[in-house]
Image 1: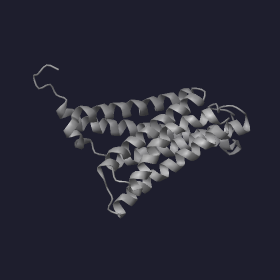
Image 2: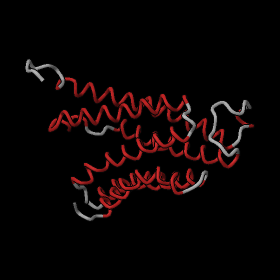
Image 3: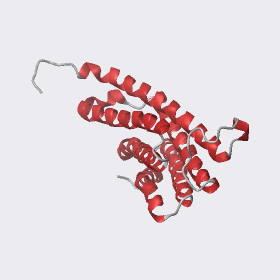
Image 4: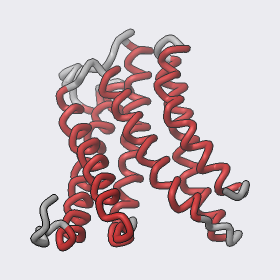
Amino acid sequence: MRWTIPNILTLMRLIAAPAVPLMFLYFQRPWADFAALTLFLLAAITDWFDGYLARAWQQESRFGAAMDPIADKAMVVIAIVVITGYSGMNPWLILPATVILFREVFVSGLREFLGGNARLLKVTNLAKWKTTTQMVAIAVLFLGTGLAFVERGRAPVVGEPHLPWFSASWADLATQMGLAMVWIAAGLTAWTGWDYFVKARPYLRDDGHDH
């Protein structure tokens, strides 16, 4: 590994992923939510900068190519697990979170199985939009849970209060917006997962040998 700024940013993002749940061990809520939100936002910003700087400064590397998608997945998977657990196990969040987690495990397994042919599953533009939508949704959900603790001292509840949207609190608006975005992210996640499966399917056919 070369110690270039893009590689350092990628490494910092990889380290930041497991630091997100640590915020809930060292801080009381809502400070834990806001600390996790800040850490997640900083990591998301570096996700754009490391790739941009690597191309602009011609510092693209094998380390960056390998670790960048791993850091993205680590940030999303760990953050979505934390949010699901600390949101009171909201059923409207569990389903899209399950779709996201399943897809990440599924595609990672496909890449491992394909080995040298894993280049067939290179990151597409749709996959980049998927990652962006996931990160925005997670950030908004962290904001919603933090604001809910400021306003009510507890995790937000879907459908509460039963008021028109223009009368809802900032916590309610952030929660509903975050949930809507995480469902959109889950749809994009499932779509890209299916796309990768179709590309890998020729290599999954039985060739007559026992496995």
